Image (cartoon, rainbow, N blue to C red; front, side, top):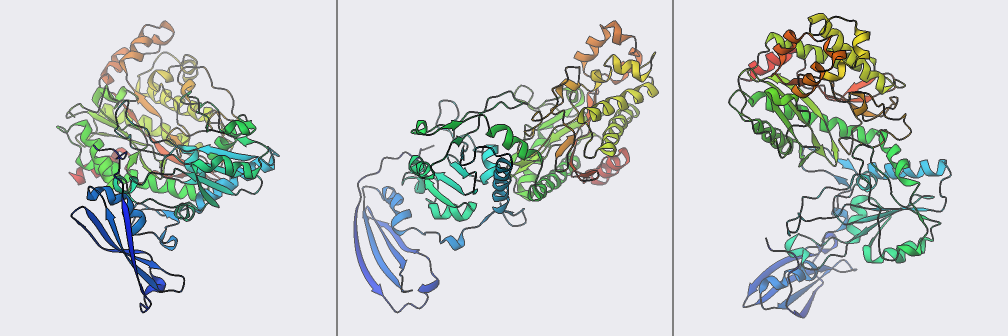
Amino acid sequence: MLRSTLVLAALFVVVVARPDNTDQECADKRDTLSDCVCQKGYRTCLKVDTLEEGCREKKRVKYNSRRCNDAEQYLSRKCGVQRNTKDVPDYYQMGPGTLKIPNTLFKDNRKRMCDRLVAKNISRGAVMFFEGGRQEQQYDTDRDIEFQQESYFMWLFGVMEADFYGAIDVDNCESILFMPRLPDSYAVWMGELKTPEYFKKRYGVDRVNYTDEMVTILSQLRPSALLIMDGVNSDSKSHFEAPSFEGMDQFKIDTTTLYNEIAECRVRKSPGEMEIMRYVNEMSCDAHKEVMKMMRPGRMEYEGEATFKHYAYMKGGMRFVGYTCICASGENAAVLHYGHAGEPNDKRVNSGDMLLFDMGSEYAGYTADITVSFPANGRFTENQKFVYNTCLKANRAVQAAMRPGVSWPDMHRLAERTIVEEFIKEGVLINGTADEMTDAYMGAIFMPHGLGHLIGLDVHDVGGYVNAPPRIDEPGIKYLRTTRDLEEGMVITVEPGVYFGDALIEKAYANPEQAKFMNKEKIEQFRGMGGVRIEDGVAVTADGIELLSHNVPRTVEEIEEFMNRSN
């Protein structure tokens, strides 16, 4: 693929102006382009400019170049269509029928952040400074990696483009975006060269300047300090790379304040953010149902992934998914993060397989995370039905108990306890009480992951261990991604699972303190089926929850009826 660093030939411009004061339509017209032709190495266009008096002046603009393509960069400036700011949308929307997100949502987020710092009397006179995501290439090639905005920058500004910076005055919450000064050749290879005025209207900020003006503009603000992001993500353990720019040493830099404060702001979703979360969950539920309609024995696992992505993009304008799609069949369903490059959803689905499909679509950075489990042939066996109902009972027990003030670790223990009790009833676990088995961590053999996680702009959203009790170092629960009490405005997943994975079962057989509770004959009947996970997106309300992923079949009866009706 040719790159945008094309070396342009020298151009000579000759302009002949011919005024026309009789055109009555000019008052409402923007600059227009007509009669562009390329003949004998010349590019000639008719440019129509709007004059102050409300009339137009027509200019015949002639470009001299060795190749017509060399003049393309000048078309965008000399005779290209220039957007009038009244035509610039002040919202994000992928297309007709998709969700419209006003830029006021991000303005409100900025105000929430400013109000939080001012209320805590943090760094008065300071300016928050952020770097957006960078456009990167794949390894040493010139292939662009498909860009997605850095989540904190997205939360504050809603900017979709790469290589922006942003600043926010803490005291008055005035906002500035700094845009890259792109080369003229960008218009040829990438599209219209948008102006600062365009981005000011598009993103609803107070001003827009170029990145090469940052030091001058920031100096004019005379900040007591620049507050910049610096911290460690509690899920990935990755360090957030602090922004830097030439001339930064002129300012006092504060790296200790911002990271946890903005992470805490993101924990509770605003009403506008909640609308996006409803939308991504609704579309993801619909996409999952499309997969359930087509998935049958003989299909490949990756066909489920392809169907999900296609539906979410075609119907919902969702170009991205929030994480690698997990489309596991049979014994693969016991692999918690199946679907990676080494196991790329490439098994053929067999009759009798249980399927575990964990996928969530993303819109404007916000993602869903939903898992459905169902039999490939549309009918549960008795063993599959038992495992599925055990998982569903744990899921619904947790949802029934959720409300503000409830401890999330207690919800994890409730899910584990429910699974253990059902296993005792079925004779899978024997020779002890539920309390004794819980003390021996029997639940973690069959549910070896945490119950759920915060979700929003990241699938494992930030803030799980900000102002939270420390991580609990015990089997299973140590993977819980937050130990906080629930609060109104949180969005969190509820995803108990019941798995029969070889590695953990063999390890438990070898441990006398656990093996004494295990009915091996019964357990062996479930080996090979993989497992079941039932994952919902749940918003915490003032007095309970709102189930966001309500629109998928969940009971055994609902699943069988849906799949057999669709067949």
